[in-house]
Image (cartoon, rainbow, N blue to C red; front, side, top):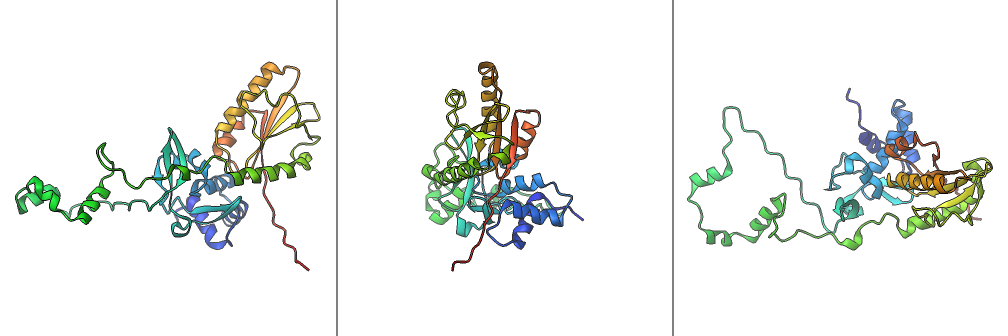
Amino acid sequence: MVEKSPADLIREAMEHLDQPTTPSEIVRYVSKKYPHIDEGKIRSQVTICCVNMPTRVSFPENRTPRAANDPKLDCLYRVDFGQYVQYDPEVHGHWEIAEADDELIVRKMTGKPAAVKPEAQPPAPGKEAVPEAKINAKAQPEAAPEKKAEEEPEQVAQKTAAKPHATAKAEPGPAVEKEKEVPSKTEKEIESAMDIHKALASNLNDVEDGLKAEPGDPSAGKFPAKLTDTDMLARGKDGALVIIKVFTEPPGHQIITDLLVNLGWAHENLKDRKVRAVILAPEFPDEIRFAVRTVSDIRLMTYEYKLVFSAVS
């Protein structure tokens, strides 16, 4: 029996779960049916398979520009924070992983992706494959240059679409609008992060025993890697300054670099005070988990929203 890939397990879970659903529900379904599967891989696969998740480009499967039309890999769509449905391009539009300013980004396409060219069939046994050009040459003499102008526009369009790479003189294909690129943090995500920020302020003991908010700490504006509005400063019961980074989606690996820069700066400039960090996110890619295993001053914590339904009298 062939073992299913993480992507296969995601698709199977989505076929059995009510939608929209959460990463936790997907993990719960897979873990119950396949207890030998590592939960971290499933959580990472949710990000990998989500066509409109900006951080999917952090994973090896998505580090090459391509249209998100691989049914084995592009099967989820995020409709809201922590809410996922099965991806349907006719409903959610066509998405792609593209290169912009030497970086990979996730963005919505203005048109449909080019159809995948079918693989060439091997020649029948005993028959040597003959190039199409030779066949045409035997059938009729080479056409004069002006003959090409008489081709039907439809034929010309088909030939143009079949070329894998446009030349310098070729007209560009359907352009993807720059303004439709998915930013690293949308206004909605910032708003969601601020909501978590407010909930966090009254539940800091769940993050670390004795932790207290310290929004006015004088070190806030001195860090080389600037803190954002969704970050939070707190003070541990040992007097240490704790940087809390809040994310509404799995963070990219750049956050580790930023935190190491700030922790190194603090070690050199705040010698009379300890500084450590906590990253809060609904889930983490494997590369983030691996990166912090040897850094004792950075801790990862996950969280999730819970819906509470109440009857209206």
